[in-house]
Length: 357
Image (cartoon, rainbow, N blue to C red; front, top):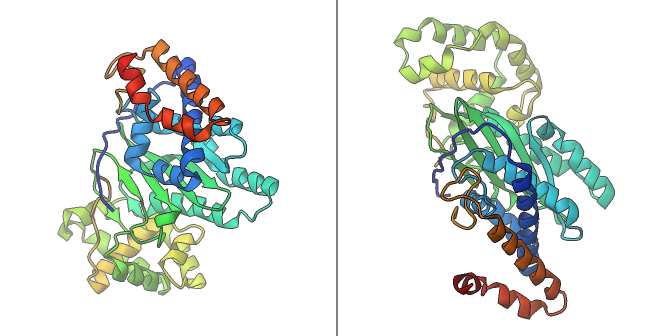
């Protein structure tokens, strides 16, 4: 997967209601055209691309450089698909407390449509756990959107914050081969912080040794963590930073759980109740101390001219122009029901229409 970067400074405030309503309308129209022309799989594949998603948000008129693009575009899509019946795409989750309701929302849709939601609920919970605990870059998740098709394909778009910056994490089940080895479609941010990357594809041996250590007698692990903390001045800078906020006493109960449960692999270890970022970090440091397994510090992170942006960049939004786009797409969709193929050919000539209008 190619790694690229997008600058996402945190912006305060809310999206104006007048803009959100237009974003909802236009997002729905564009989504409908893509799904009817190319199918739901193509739509999800595009949406899971970090840069297509960014361009999509810019076309909708949101600030191209704002963290709010993520939450607002996902919110607009969720509202739009409440009206788009029969297309087979469902949008769950959102920002803050809404993100925690994602499993319930998936379950409610499953009960209505008659399918087993367990795999989707697992994917929703586990992707959040990976990005919070296995990519230890200091970004705390506050947004989680889970979008899936009736065939069971899913994507995740979630975002974390640190200081005045945000980082967005994209997942796509179609390209996913492992939840714990280079699982992301892309991660975007322009600010790099010290990152302990436990899903580095080259670190199978580290993950395996952490699993082995989780089955070790708790008092031995605690003894080694205390030893590491007592020798902080002799540790490399990165290790000193990673160890400084770990309290050995608080790890004792968790180590007892892992010792009793004896997880059979790293993914099972990650899925245990109570195993969080500090437990994983402690096991990684012990692995480095005992087995010489080096930690990975590779940071996996690496169109706004359609209608302008709400903050005036690259220019102020033109409401008549925005409304004209909505009306053109609405007419196209209505006429497409009668002359589908001819009308979509006309849509492809929209560029020429605007050029000479």
